[in-house]
Image (cartoon, rainbow, N blue to C red; front, top):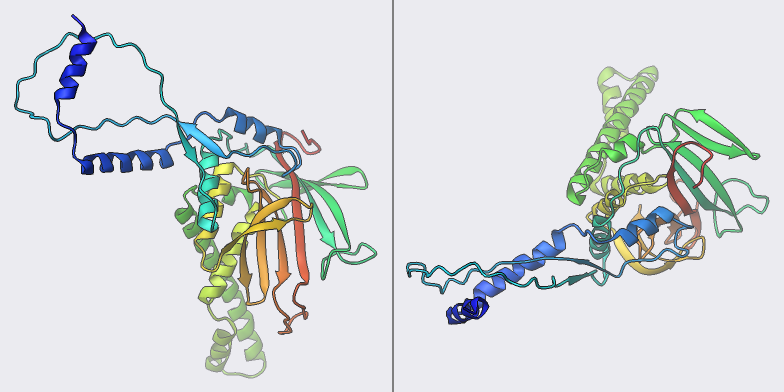
Length: 373
């Protein structure tokens, strides 16, 4: 008996499923492809482990592949009809068909975050141990001709800086005059333990960031209120008058300020740190959800590398942006630049003046300070 032919004949006798069933199955397949983790990307993980100077020679992923299978049951089958039992056929194995999952053309911040998440899904890197060290090498800009600190205007010279930061943030190390100096404590506003506690789903991550922003603001307001009230009492104000003055001196954040702080919190978390790619992709996704965050498709960082940016105009005149490799989705640095002239209570700035610029050249996890891999 030709069992395969009999199986084909019975299959061909069945009614075709209606178009709506096919459309629903296709929709489920598409959703599965977008959400399923990508397995076969050992080449990508190897490239990440190598980590040469960021943006120089790193191969990017244009497409990733995975295997998906969907079984569609046609409602046109008569389920009450007796089914003749056939001998179990020994089917010849057929090659699995690979369906390419292409990254989205990037037109906005959400597209960029989506692609970063797709690429990161195939990365098997683990969260570093608390006693390991993050080695970071960056280049920052200076404007003073004599090499003084700070940046204000257009860069006149740059300086390269190396640093080692223990993952539990209990120590960090720098090289001074060729000698490695290990320092107890931390100087980082966004701590590593807090970063690694963040969820890797963008909405949940952003909610945690807003919680942190609100907690820091509550502490700031309480401190400001207490100082303002004491000062008012010293000037002879009654308790009621001093309280009113203190409340006026410590207003809550506006929505715009809250969003500004959230953007800065995430951006600072990427600086001077080595982060798992899934966490970094979630941080891009969280940024994309902050009102006012925009995407720019063409830019150049301080190291003259081509990149894209996510940016937000803060306080109406300062554009804060992070640089991202458009192929690997690695973080590449940041810049703050004036978008218009401003003379409001601080140091006056002119449109186009740069007030901060840093490029990340290398970032790897090592076992002890002084190592660079």
